[in-house]
Length: 186
Ligand SMILES: [Fe+2]
Ligand SMILES: [Fe+2]
Image (cartoon, rainbow, N blue to C red; front, side):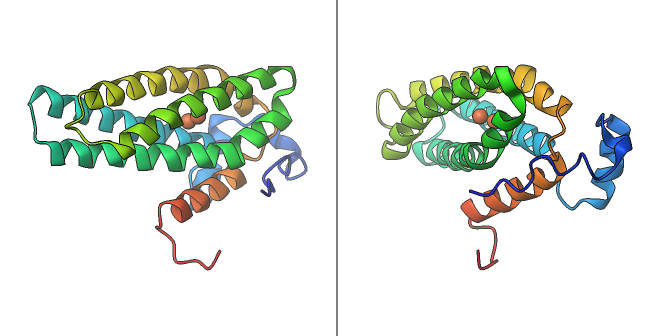
């Protein structure tokens, strides 16, 4: 698992020691992908919207097929997101977080719990008595996990010299590959 994005920005410009909002805005104009953290936060928003949609379907007593389609979309999105974080973002975060590395340990454990529920949801159907509860609890897990990532881990990583633009490109490419949205050979 190459993490070529690590620590390449320091030598790029001596003026880039703090990654200001202005600096990021400039970078994003030329970059094709958002930076790593922006990309992960966008995923968080998208999956939260899907959980809300599922909840609405439950309240509306929608049919199983509709509910299952949303639930499976949640599972696919979360699996691609979590895999990209585990393969690319978390190892890079570990390199720069120092004594705050335990944030990544906790995130890994939370991913493992979420994956167990994802597997149960993927194996089941909305006609199972606990299906709605599983989707709801997964949503609550993810809410908690996202709060920790966005509230603690991401701000600390943002302050480091990690090259988030390159890492963002790697994450976007890996996610596209996992979601079958790329025809590139690797
Ligand atoms: Fe995340
Ligand atoms: Fe995560």
